[in-house]
Amino acid sequence: MKKYLVIAYLSLLQMFTYRLSFILWRFRNIFNLVFIYYLWTSIFTNKNSLFSYSQEKLMTYILVMTLVSSLVLSTRTAEIGADIISGNLINYLLKPISFFKLVLSKEFTDKLLNFTFSVIEIFLLVIILKPHFFIQANSQVYFFAFLSFLIGSFIAFLISLNISLIAFWSSEIWAPRWIYSILIWFLAGSFFPLDILPDLLYKILLLTPFPYLFFIPTKIYLDGFSLNIFPPIVISLVWCYILFIVTKKVWKNGIKNYNAYGR
Amino acid sequence: MIRNLKIFWLLSTLSAKTAFQHRVGMISFISGKIVRFAFYFFFIYFLVSKTRFLAGYSLLQTLIFFLSFNFIDALTQLLFREVYRFRPLIISGEFDGVLLKPYHPFIRILIGGIDIMDTITIIPYIFVLVYYIFQIPHLNSANLLLYGGFLLNGLVIATGFHIIILAVGILTTEIDNIIMIYRDFTKMLSLPVDIYKEPLRSFLLFVIPIGIMMAVPVKVLFGLLTFNMFIISVIVTFLFMFFSLFLWNKALKKYQSWGS
Image (cartoon, rainbow over all chains, first blue to last red):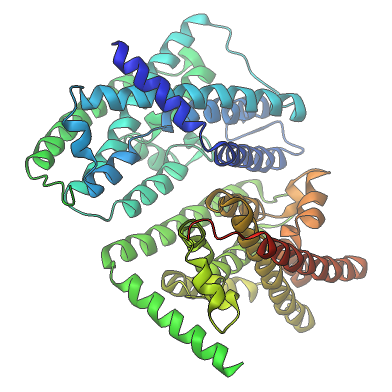
C-alpha cells in the first residue's frame, strides 16, 4: 500500500511541475462554467421556470454538475494509450507493482486535485455571480447521490481506459477520445439537463452510459426521492458490469499480442 | 508576392498529403466536427424555439450568430492550423531553421499548411449559413456587403490573436493551453454577446476583441450597429493588430534558441 501512496504523491508533484500549464488549464474550466451560466441566466430573464426547472434549480444543476463532472471526468487513463504506442507500457509491466493499482493511484490523485480546485473555483464564482442556489435538505439523498457519483466515476474510468486500449491495435487513439469528449459534452448533460429533451429522446439516452456519468448524480441531488432512484442506479450498475467485462477481455487480448516495438 | 503564394501552395499541398496519410483519423475528426455542429445546432434550435427569444434575438437571428461563429472559427482553423504545431519547433530549436529561410517566418509558422479537414467541413457550414441569411426578411444588400467586410475584419483580428499566441509561445513555450483559451473565448461568442452582463460584455468586445470578430458582423447584418460602434470596431482592430506585431517583434528579440 505504501508504494502506491508514494506513486500518488509523485503523481501530484508531477502535475505541479508545469505550473503555468496547470493554471491555464484550470482557467479553461472557469470559462466553460461562465458560458453555460450566462446562457441559462439569459434564458431565464423574465421567467420563473422553464422545462419544469425553476431558475434556482437550474443554476444549482449547473454548479453541482460542474463539480461532479470535474471529478468523474478527471483521469490519467489517456496516458496509457500513449504508453502502449511508445512501448513505455513494458516498463510498468516489468516492475514489481500492479499496473492497475498504479493507474488507480494516479487516478485518485488526479481526482483529488480536480475536486479541490473545482470547489475553490465554484466558491469564487458563487461569491462573484451570486446565483440562486438550492440546498438539498434530506440528508439521506446525499448518500444515494454519492453512490451514483461513484458508479458514474467507474463508468467514465472504464470507457476512457477502453479508448486508450485501442492503442494495442491502432495508433489512431486521439480521434476516438475526441469523439468521446464531444459525446460527453452533449449526451451526458454538461450543457443542459437531459430531461428537458423530448421524452422519447430522453428515454433512449437513459439506455446509454452517458447520463449516468454526472446527470443522474446531479439529478438525484436536486430531486431527491421524488425521482425514482433505483432504476437509474440499477441500469448504471449493469453498465459498470458490461464495461468491466469488456475491459478485461480487451486488456487480455491486447496484452497477449503486445510487442512493445522500439523497446 | 507570387513567390510567397507558391510557397504557401507548396506547404499546403504537403500538409494535405500528411493528413491523407492518416485516413482513419481524418475521417473520424471530420465526422466528429460534423456531429458536434449537428448537436449544437439541434440544441440551439430546440432551446430557442421553446423560449422564442434569446437575449432579445429571435431563433433565426440566434442561428445566424451561431452559424457565423462556425464559419469564422472553421476559416481561422483552416488557415492557422500550423500555429497548433509551433511548440515542437520551439522546444526542439527547429525554429532556427525557419528563421534562416529566405521568406517571412509567418508563411511557415502561421499559414504554413491549411487544414484539409476544415476545408471539407467549412463547405456545409457555408451552405447552411447562406440559406439562413436569405431567410432574413427585408435583407438589405448594403448590410450584406458590410457583413462580408466585417467578416474580413474578424479574420484580421483572428490573425492578430494567432500572432500573439506565437509570440507567447516563444516567450514561455506554452502554446497548447493558450490556443485552447482563445478557442474557449471565441466559443463564448457562438451565441449573441448580449447574453453576458457588464462588464464581461465590454471586456469581450473591446479588451479582447473577440466580440468584434464574432458578434459585430452579425449585428451589422441585422442593421443593429451604430455608427460609433462601427468606428470603434475598426480602430480596435487596427490597435489590436499593431499590438500583436509589436509583441511578435519583442518575442523574436528574446528568442534564445534553447533547444538547438
